[in-house]
Length: 195
Image 1 (cartoon, helix red, strand yellow):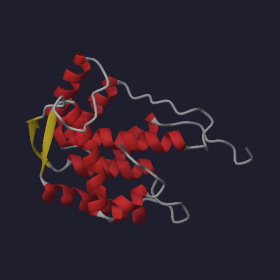
Image 2 (cartoon, rainbow, N blue to C red):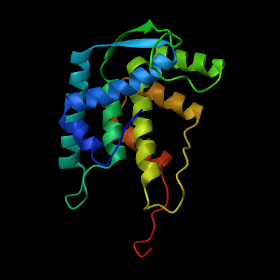
Image 3 (cartoon, one colour):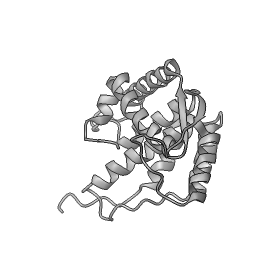
Image 4 (cartoon, rainbow, N blue to C red):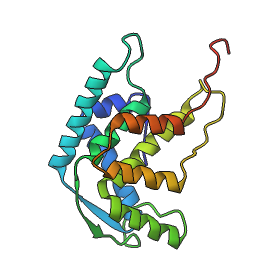
């Protein structure tokens, strides 16, 4: 569903259209499998993308040491999460029949889990989709890392996911705080340079 490579973040930052296409493909896949179709406010989504690009530039110029490799995927996705949570880019959710004659994904889970996910989508709307997208991208990058001692293990609990969603939906949301939370969630020991 997501086709990621080492350049996807740069491509998304540089091009609203590239980001929009990949991001919405992912959002529609999740929402339709749960029986929803989100009506997107494209001008607001474009505003969120512009804020993401601008904030990444600020972080790159002010908060990252000059001899570093730039912003990490965790920082970039943290900034994206806050940018998307700050704008109501989903106007409404329409009921969608996933059993219809559509080439859509199926929900993997029980009927109860599907109903809980529908409740989460309804409560979080665009922020829910942004969070799922960011986590999927981060997980892909973390799975591919070969500079860590421990194997990648996804440690997000439903309770922590709920708390993060509440925080992202609040007016107090902050990209640095989101980054620090995600950094702790994904922390693993670095391999020695000699290895």
